[in-house]
Length: 492
RNA sequence: CGGGGUGUAGCGCAGCUCGGUAGCGUACUUGCAUGGGGUGCAAGGGGUCGCAGGUUCAAAUCCUGCCACUCCGACCA
Image (cartoon, rainbow, N blue to C red; front, top):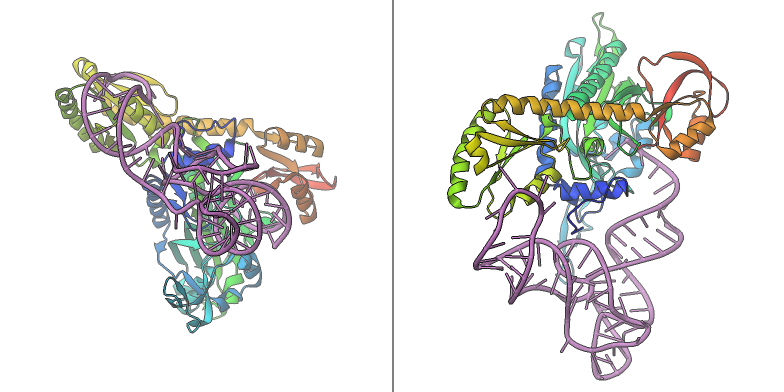
């Protein structure tokens, strides 16, 4: 771990990922098993995601609220399939007090302080939110109810990995209530579109929009929609989900409204979320053997400026000019950082900012100052050019746009190159073995087949794409007739 | 819960077979030189060797028990 360079992706992809997360200063493991400490650089990226997503939620009419982290145990029993989905990974609070141990050297749980009703640390908030909705909704005039909350949740996972799967993670969960099924479905689809828009235009990751099969569906939903992204190792990552809950939670929590005719109806619900897992997607979609590559629109520092100098006088002259440059860049809305640490040499700084993924690096020394120019280096291509200090802001702006476009196109081309259409199980297994990727294949629609393929190959059906072309074919596994291809992949 | 592995400086590790002053790399501190791609040299600080017990003149090392972490399987965003 103390070595300077990363393990190469081609040597050990998952080791590369682990090292990158730590060396780029994004996060580290905590002393609590399965939980992570998100460090300032990592959290700054998450904050940028939050800010943008939050804007997008507000623009689509949602408001933020906050519900408690603790859920009465009895709430979880109310929606049967929901319970089954989460029961195995819930943390439970049983006591509310500690006391000093006999020898006075430690603290122990006070057996006197047992809770009458145990509390569940939320794995998701449907139950506690719907129990409030019952009180808030009486009439069609109260609908739609469009809420979102930013929160942490806990799912007691066996195998964890920084950002991709942690016992505690940060996310956003939207919970909406509607008068009609059509409206709820429209909401579910709308939020999926918001996620896809965000993924492509901010994360610079192309995503597949689709619907989950019954066995991959959220416990308690009638339909689960998702966006699926392809990582550089050929594995799929679910980057966001949106659920049409039907009237399941309304019935479980008795949430009814009077329609215009005064008739009592159960309301229709949705829920949707993205989590810190997006950080994992961001890392695995773009980064290289030199470290992180951040999409410019989410980079906390879009530009870093490194001075090249020998004497203090040189540094002063350079710094004076850099201050002007920074003012111009900031006026244009570009976030810029001047790295004038005297304790590190330029080469060290270059490598460090590359590891951290800063999209553009400007280097300026006395020679540049004399020639009224600056060196501009792109993180995505390592391309270096000298540019005049005149018109620099426009150039930087254009370069940031170009980086976004370039990494998006690269990811898109990678996905194209790793998307296969297969018609036989043999070919299916071969491709999975060799390069992975998305595999479009015919499926007979049964859970048995889906399961058998999963057990034999570890590949799952990632989704049935929206607007999927209908075509006659035969299931690659059972040979039974099929009307459409579905997308298989190994997944995170 | 089943099978393997590891606990020694902030991090990564050696030392244990064969008991005898606790070491290496890196990071850290100081100084000098260096400064357009991870700088060099020199000096310095830092350790309940996972915990408890036992054997012994003497335990990181041998014995017993416990704990923690980790990897691989079953479950999952």
